[in-house]
Length: 458
Image (cartoon, rainbow, N blue to C red; front, side, top):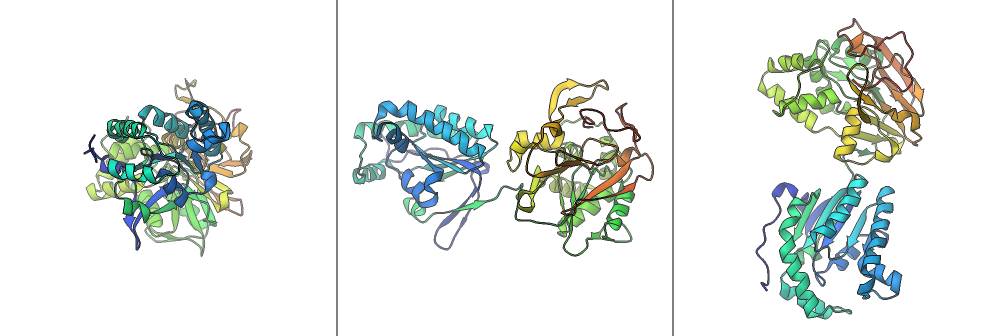
């Protein structure tokens, strides 16, 4: 058996953030994730876990066998031990707690079980792979209080050698391959919040509903909120200490896409605003990436306006939208902002499914009478602690409902452009200058109350 198999490392874009520190390598991991330690017996997984994680964060297969049988070496209890560990991981991730799996995790089929649990809770996954020569593993094994037989050790190493290449295709958020024992001994693990997690940011904020290229109305609203807007309408400075928070759908349907983008991007770049993507913004981003999209609901006119500005402006817009988080959790978790809203169980988590909910809401898979996607009324069942402020589905009047507020008051359809001052919870709005676009939904009527089940997303 080779001492150190020549195995392909995962592609560079799968490796996690790292940097050299004063005393060794610094690896960044999300502060909410599932960490899999991968390596044969004797490679130092338990020692690594003990140095960097709380005892309550570590799910150990040896410890689970001991819990069940009083003997961590009782291999006949392995299936029961892992059933217990799977349930514990399921519960910890439901509570949004970082969880570390201290087991050999040598086989892809076993790792996939852990990945499935993480996906169910929208948790990122990190693989810390201890890839040392067999001679070093044998030496470490001899120094252990509970040694593994040479036969078992060789079996582990053979599986590790065979399964190592599969790691790069298994779908981890980050993979770290650790091959130098000294690097592991001096390693620092730095926990970083998810991009959506801004609980330490108390605001105050001015949350702005769907703009849809209504630049004139946006300038009026910002001025009403006390912002100093430049004469050309392309820059705005907030009152001291405040920031705007745009809830997405900056583009499409309205008359001045470029001016709205210039204003909002400039405010974000200057630190005067935060911004979230809407479904229209996301579709524009995909179009700018060259992906096939339908140029409906104003996208064709948006692209014409952007193309007239040249490639550098299009690239700036693309980079801007690519960098936006799916939602934001703010003010010690008291406030959640998302374009289409967000259920309590999805808040402060990040995955493709979470992002889809933030952009589009909760579709039923059916079409309504207008031939457009029907969406579940998630607000009806919302009982979360956080106040959720969102847009996406036009309503005649912004109003509180189960600790949520929809700020899309249909400006582009002739309604109003609305903002919510936080933490004051004061609603501020300005009327549309005109109806810039006809609603594709026959039910839209600014004089009517919101129908049972809510206005479905456009």
